[in-house]
Image (spheres, rainbow, N blue to C red):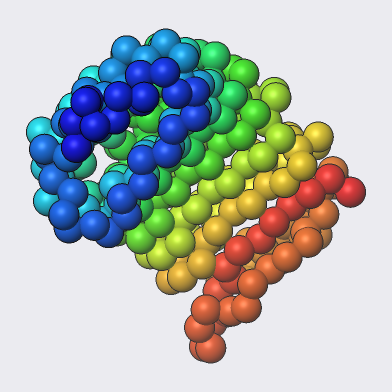
Length: 249
């Protein structure tokens, strides 16, 4: 895969590069793809998925970051590197965070850092996402992260008030075993400000230390939003709720 093979990539406006769980994708493939679209001034929407691509190293991820930095007119961006262990080793998330500071006109942002994200990664990301004041859609997944705690959620909750145009908010913390009821409440309280949002979705499924307390408080304490869904318990002994969605009453 190279620039000659993807000759039209320099003029497209909407591009999806999807290679989830593909062991054949390596740094060479990533380099060819990024070279093909680097500097494309017409590109408005970009979606890249190299989740669980174990042959992509820090070299390939740095190429991806350099490419993203050159796409200054992108308004809708989705990056999925779930399960790419090299991301934490090469500082990909921190570097991408700094790059996003150049995209203050973003309207939609989706980031999937499942398995590899930490509190520090989320804090770093939040410090730059907060500059994207025009965001209408924000989707963030840090699922199955063993290093994600309530502290990371506190940093995320601190920046949410700055997004006054949000219509869709989707936060996924599935399987983050160190998140407790306190973390669930931190996010739910911050989410209540979005009275005009079409949908707010938060996933705390399989957060082993959360109980029925937080969902109960959400149901009884929300004035502007109504609880429209809670999933089934994740364990028998002590109830642990999973997904809840909120919408305006």
